Each structure stands twice: as structure tokens, then as C-alpha cells.
Amino acid sequence: MLDRWLGNEARVTGFCAALSALALALSLSGVFTGKPGFDVAWAAIVLCGTPILVGACRGLIVDRNVKADVLVAMALVASVATREYFAAGEVALIMQIGSLLEDYASDKAASGIEKLIRLTPRGAHVLRGEEREDVPAEQIHPGDRVVVLAGEAVPVDGVIVEGQTAIDQSVMTGESLPVDKKPGDRVGSGTVNQFGAFVMICEKASADSSLQRMIRLTEEAQANKAPIVATADRWATWLVAVALFCAGAAWFFTGEFMRAVTVLVVFCPCAFILATPTAVVAGIGNAAKYGIIVRSGEALERLSRIRRAAFDKTGTLTCGKPQVAAAVSCRDNFADSDVLHLAAAAEQRSEHPLGRAILAGADGSVAAAEDFRVVPGQGVSATVENKRVLVGKADFMKSQGVDISAADAPAREWMRRGATVVYLASDGQLAGFIALADALRPDAPRAVQKLKAAGVAPMLLTGDNEAAARRIAAKAGIEDVKADLLPEGKMNAIYACSRGGEPVCMIGDGVNDAPAMTAADAGIAMGGVGSDIAIESADAVLVLDDIKRIPYLFSLTQKVMRKIRVNIAASMVINVSAVVLPALGVLTPVTGALWHNFGSVFVVVNAALLLRVRDDSE
Image 1 (tube, rainbow, N blue to C red):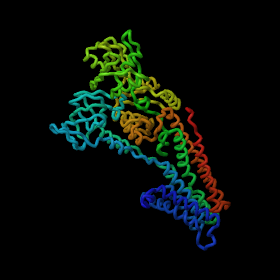
Image 2 (cartoon, helix red, strand yellow; image 1 turned 45 degrees about the vertical axis):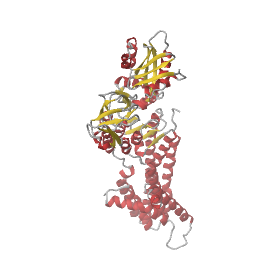
Image 3 (cartoon, one colour; image 1 turned 45 degrees about the horizontal axis):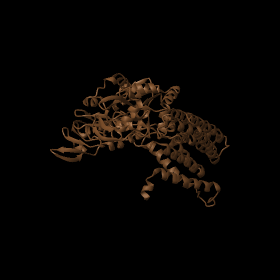
Image 4 (tube, rainbow, N blue to C red; image 1 turned 180 degrees about the vertical axis):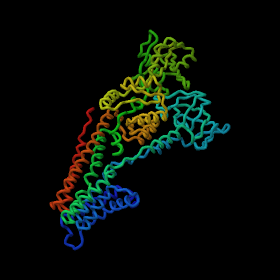
């Protein structure tokens, strides 16, 4: 248990900081000062100062790089050398508090690769002659006959040879509706068999499957994302040089080494280092109030630079589920509502996603159905109110001798808009049809409009067909549309934007969006309906799927970065101005330490104002 506790670096650092604060309070109050050669402030120097000294030495000796730790270490050593133990402990404590804030706001999220790996089916049912044998997925070879049961993920890429079903391909293509499959059709690994069993011939080994390829794409994209470099570390060399120059000048012109030490103490960049993590923590906390999880300060910085937002369609701009778009009657004695309710009655025992959508669209009680039968991949039949009812696609109607020509023109128009058409026949005659489509989120048009007003250009990247993509994009107010994209295509589209000099953000919800998210400058995931891999690959997650929060998120990140710049500028002005006072002998190391903390207080209070930022879409 002790090993587990000590293994938590943030917990250990917090504990040391708490003990150091207590020790400094006792030192300032005069407790233990009567004992010669001892000051309880040494506890703070050892507990909080040691990691700083080690980090500075490692940077100089091992990495041969000057970081902000070097300037802090110089102030510590100079304070201890002049027996100003409280000043040394106080500087060390503030640095550890800054480190804690940075750790709290840092990106601890996994790349999501492990989540993708978990999606890979572990086993499969392979036919060996007439026997069915369960084997690990990695032992499947091209040419093997594999049985996939209802609800199971397809273990490898292959071709169906027996059986008909509907396959949920959203994991790979983002298509909102399951796709009916029959013998001769290809299926990809990671996609899900919706109902019924089928037999397929393996085309590729597990290691070469489409899902494994996506894993590799995501790994490559993640590797191309360089980590952020702290501003304080970027300027550390100049800060050290300036601090040494000022301290040397104070010593040279006054002849008092104590004044040089005081200059080093007040020049120590406590406020400068706190400027970023305090604003980041406040910004992340504000976003959390509105149901947005932001991964890190690095993520905030990247989101603030975004000038193009690439949306996925299914589950992002849309609700991600098929819904009844229209019920159209083709007979005089049938109303449109009659078509929907009769079809819902026939489908009430169906397991097909389209059947469930029709039943949900009826929005009320439906008549009882008898003699229910399913023709896999084609449709259903049932007896409803003494009528023999057929519900299914065009091929099913034709196979049952039903003439659907009366619905050709209106049905084609709905299909042109990207909808799926299901026909209804009663007693052998066409009664009408039902168009099903994925519905646009109500808040999507306003969110897109506000993005445009903020100078962020929207675009749509989807694996769905061109007609469906154009229909949704037009409703949302997006002109730039790229359809029929596989995960690699989305990633290449993101790279094309980046090469054009436009920082781009990918907004999606599915596994197929993960490579594009990691390739983009930033990624936003829809948390409510999103897959684990999309969420883990994203820099920010909309927990409640509120797409209207996206403009607020971009606005907030820009305000955070402005606040950081103000904090950095203010802290530098305060520190530089404070150099004059010790040089004139006005400040001692202790009073100088307290004075320069005014900058730390300022940046914390200024950053806390970010918590008052509101989303104007409320």
C-alpha cells in the first residue's frame, strides 16, 4: 500500500508542499528560532527545493539545456548561502505549487490505441469440415470459413458465402444505417453483425485487417503530434542571463552581496511560471461547468489556434440513428399516417434497426400482428387487421409479385436526398412507402453559424454517400463537403488542410474518426454517443453531446491564451520593477521574497476571473 501511495507523484508532491507550508508558517512566527543553527524553514528547502536542484543539474549536465529550474536553483543556493532560509523555502514552495498545478492540468489521457486494440475480436468460429472450432482471431488464415453469429463483431476481412444479414459499419465508415449484406458481399473486421448468422471466407489474416490498419494509422498520427514546450523554459536562457547581469550590477555598484542575493530572489520567475497553469486550470474548470472535458493546457493552446473545424456527419452533426422522415401513401384509400401505423404493426417484432425506427416513428399504440415472418436482408410479413402486410425493400416486393412502379418518382426523390426507402404492401398491392434518414441535431445550424462568425470555417468529412452528406450539410449551413471517405481519407483531408497553413480541428464520435482526430491540430469528441477510442483520442470531450457548446469552447480557449499572455507580461513587469528596489537597498531577501509574491497573487486572481466566463448560448 505504501508503494502504491509513493508511486503517485502528484500525491507525494502535494504532501511535501503541505509540510513545507507548515514549516514556513512556523519559521515566520518565530517558533524554534531560539535554537542556534536551526530554522524549521529547512524542511521546505529540503522537501521542495531538492527536486528543483536535481532538475536544474540534470538539465545542465545531462540534457545540456538551460531551463527555468536553473534560475530558481540559483536563488535557492544564494539564499541558503546568506542564511536567508525563509526566502529559500518560500521560493521552493511556490515552485512546487506551480508544478502541482501543471500536473493537474497536464494531458494524462491515453492515446486511445489500447481502446482500439480492445475492439479487435479475440476469437472466431472456424469451420473445420463439418465441425465448428473456436480459435483465437490471430490463428485465422486466408481461405478459412468463419461463422459470425448475431451480435458478434466480424473477426477478419472477408466475403459472405452463406446467409443474409445487416451489418453495422459505423465503426469503420460512419454510416448511420446498417447495410444489408448477402452472399458475395464483403465485410470488414470490427463491424458488427446485427442479426442472424452467416458464413464468410477469410480474405486477410488478422494482422492485415482493416481494423488493425486503423490502429497503425492512429499510432502514426499520434507520433506526428509534437508536445508543447513551456514558455518559461523557452525563455530560460535569457532569464538566467538577465538575472545574473542584474545581480552582478547590484553587487558591483553597491558593494553589498546581500543586495545581489535579493535581486536573484525577486527575479525568480514564480509568477511567470504560475501564469500558465493557473489560467489553464481556471479555463478547464469553466469548461467542465458546461459539460466539456478538456485534456490539458496543451490542448487548450491548440484549440485556441483553430481556424477550420471538420465535422463528422453521423452522430456528430446528426443524432446517429435512423428516424422516419416521411410516410407516403400511393393508394387513395390509405392516408400517410395509415402507411406508417400499418408498417409499424408489422415491424413490432422485428429486430432490424429500420424496423425499430419505423415502430418508434409511429409514436403510439399499433394494431396486433399475427403470423410474423422475417426474410433476412429483405423484409418482413405479417397479418394485421385481417390484411396480409409486407414491409421491405424493392427487391423483396418484386419477389412477392408486388408492383411498386407507382412509387418510383417520389421514392427516387427521397433516395436522392440520402434517405433509405422501405415499401409497404397490403394484400398484394402497394400501399405506400416510408423514408428513413438520420436527423440533423437541432442546435447544429446555430453552432455552425456562430463558428463562421468567429472566423472558423466549417467543413464536413464523412464516410456516408454524397447525397446524404450534401443534404445534411445544406441544412447545417456547411458548403465544403467531402463524402465517401474511409478513415484514411479523412486523415488525408486533415493533412491537406494542415499543409495549407490552416490549424484544423476534427469533431467526431466514432472509431473511424480517431486517426483524423490525432492527425488534426486538435480533436473534439461527442462523449454521449461517441466510442471510447474517439473520446480517448480527443483533446476535448462534449460529455452531453451539446454541439452548441463548440463555439463557446473555441471562444474560451482564446480567452485563456489571452489571459496567459497578460499574466506573463504582468509578472515580468512586476519582477523587473522589483529589481530596482533591492538594488537601492529598500528590500532585504525576506521582504523581497514577499514583494515579488505580489506578482504570483496577481496572476492567480487574474486567472480566476476565467471562472466567470459564461456561454452566451445558455
